[in-house]
Length: 343
Figure 1 (cartoon, one colour):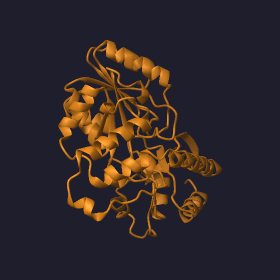
Figure 2 (spheres, one colour; figure 1 turned 30 degrees about the horizontal axis):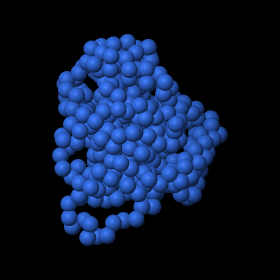
Figure 3 (cartoon, one colour; figure 1 turned 90 degrees about the vertical axis):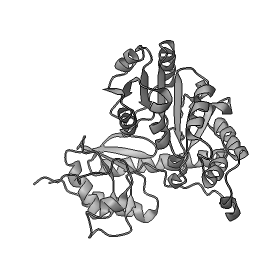
Figure 4 (cartoon, rainbow, N blue to C red; figure 1 turned 60 degrees about the horizontal axis):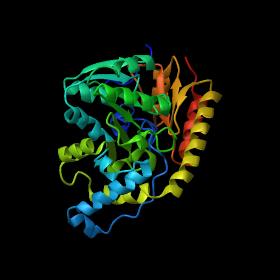
């Protein structure tokens, strides 16, 4: 019987303990390569414990929005809405924008389709840029692009996205650009804001290696960003996230140095796969997408050795691997890939 992925597979990366319950004999500690999160956590200074005994102040969130606007190249902090993770913001966008026809450039991160489908929207996934340009002419429609794309790392030209946003706006529509993996790239169109037809999403936890603080941003015209802040209500961002965000987003030298480190790591990971004749189908600075006819077998083989990659049951030849954190994790992965033999 051919190897298959576990059923059910977690909808997102992570959930390593749930996955590894199917592999009770695997060595610990488990190595989570399923998320595309930077292995280099920002060394932020924790606030004094007394800060957790009071509600965050409005001034604290205003400061975070100013720092985020500067980091993302947005001229007006009123264009920034901070929330408890980008996933929450994705889920709120259908309620912010109301019923729409939604066209998504795929294949891509499934959370966008799930959010709009759950709100009763009509979803149409296209794979060609011309198809998305055509969809931008649908009056009042929504177009969604992940840039860089997850899971294949595809990057759309910023000039093309700017023209697409203009086209959406001319038909009273909205272009949503999810830039969750853009911090170490040079493809952002956030500096176009304020723009009447554009919403940009930025993740904090992925690039700064701190997903547990739950922080993300929606960047939009001030009226839209303000409505989104109103939907979330007071104290949407906790004290720890406010502190981490203000420190990390203002630290350009750390970000520049880390960009070089993860770029070198991603190249190393791609070489590891190529050395074992595993096709590299795409990559970003924080992950590599492998393609193999026996990807389910490779996924199980890695799990049996305590290494958890991101599987895609709907595309069974795909396997996405994030970057190991420590030398011993690199050794475990390289040894496992070297030992794997397709049946």
